[in-house]
Length: 378
Length: 243
Image (cartoon, rainbow over all chains, first blue to last red; front, top):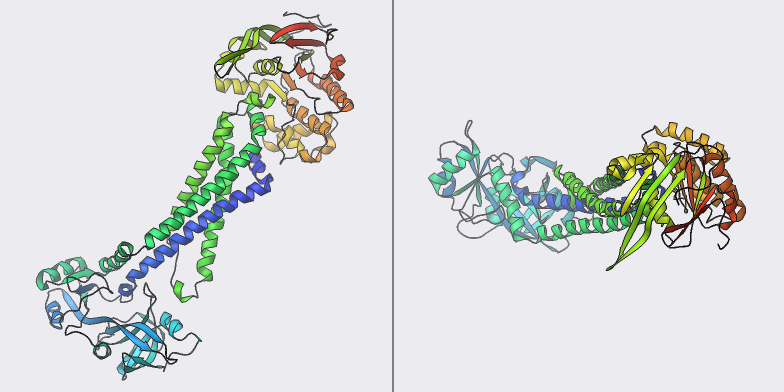
């Protein structure tokens, strides 16, 4: 009977494709929007993930994220270094600045000061050049996404001179970095240079990056640092999570994406529900005849479930493939750099598709089950 | 009312109804469509159930084949009191013992003629290809062996009705129930379909009951039952003069 059910469905090409389209569109919308949402809010943690060597981030107690920070006095570095279990501790500066580009445009940038001696604070990989160039005067390294914003014509950024907060800076390398939430241009330079580029208050140090000694868990070390220095200390994962939470709590992004995902679900229910109901209505005589002949309600349920399952399988597959195609198609676009589909997202979509099909299938099935076999004689 | 003219051979009681009444609710009103029908349908006969629209013939035939519960009364099909069966057993009983021919054929439009004819066997759990083979054999018997691969919409009305007859007979049911099988056919096709039903659906151990008001085929019946206002008013081999 399942074969008959499938043939009944596929034989009505218009409704079959309508159902597949409904599920595919719904899956695409849910999967693609959730993927973008997850990747976007993970950008809130990009600054932390760009410094993989730091086990612990130490900051002023009022600082919340890498971008929402309150500078500390230079003495904080010594305090942290004196805490038992700290293998190393280096200063880290993050501040905003303005750059006047070659064609006269103004571009807001993030300036990141990394440790002069060890260059801890730099991303792990370079897209062009080497981190050694920071030893040369006025050197800055730009992030790869930043080059596409600042040099749109495919111009080589290496050797380009910038007017950075009214001071000379020369780009001598390109870092392979995870873009920030706002995809703002980021310039890396030595901590001592950064102090010159970003004049400000007496206290300038944004963070102290810490490596824990062997055998000391970062969680233990954060507690110890907080107790002994009065500063706030977060492990890498905790601080990354703080960045994500900040975006969730302080932007309308979750609501907007949530609405779109909900719309995807509603559109799915509407298209699939309507088409499924029309399909069942068109075939109600055939179902009635089958019931009269002696096909049990449980077999009818199986038939409708098989029809829903087939539509779901094809539609869901197409929707997920569409999302993969989208991510792949835009992978060269800097905005989507590093985007991936978390394994939970297709599972959530599958759950949504299952609910859509179960709901619409149940509604359609009710008409079939309510149909009296005797109706075929009327 | 329970007996008609005796056929030439010894007949077996295929359907036996006793005191069958059926009420329908219409708002506050209760309408009684059948009034205590006592009736025996014999195997080996082509029995027509004739009556005006609203006379209750569709209700009676639905009750006799186990798809509509009577309000009162007892229905036995080949000795089985079908309404004392559980729902599941009743459905199974229909599947094994009753063949249906509907006025509108109710063929599944997206599967070919042979697969349509094979539906009861597939529903019984037979392998699809084996069921199809048996359906093809039945269709050959009904002279539409050359149409097995066609979809219903590629067949004429008469051919579709033959496919429906194949479907009704493929599982060799003991009771064949037909609802206005010639209503959508021209006179010639209608007669051919009735001749065919006589040939294939009537046997000593099988009953065939046909609901019709097609006077073009009345002469082919072994027995004609006339239903008026929910009561059997005539039982004979011919139609009464006043009809």
